[in-house]
Image: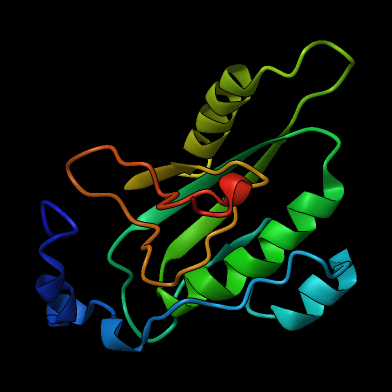
Amino acid sequence: MPNTLIEMSKLDNTGEGKCLLELDKFESAEVDIFGDPSEQSILQANPHVQKGGSWRPENCKAWQRVAIIIPYRDRMHHLLILLRRLHPMLKLQKVDYRVFVVEQAGQDKFNRGKLMNVGFLEALRFGQFDCLVFQDVDLLPEDNRNLYMCDSYARHLAAAIDEMRYQ
């Protein structure tokens, strides 16, 4: 993996059986935030996703193994919209990934940080990950070029947030 994602040209080198990422074919995606997805429709649209929310490329080795940790409480509609978007995008990016939805029980104030810590510890139980992505349930990735991978530096994956209509 390149030291920084700025060195993207190195991702085109498929040495060592690594997956070829055809970055020139990545583009913005239509994100339907008004539809009402069901768990069943997401499962049917993503038969490649294994029980437990994981997938890995079959014909090549992914550049990284990524844990996606989603702190969550009482936002099923947002979670389903996010998962409907994430699974196809991560497959396109040829990421070896597992999604961890970490739900807070009870009525105490939502503690996102604690849920992230719990998600991190839970991810460790599933082996070594090269990258941890802490994903807000209501921040949807709109562009397939926003790679869900890590480099040498921490970064925020949300390039823009639509709460101000990008103004």
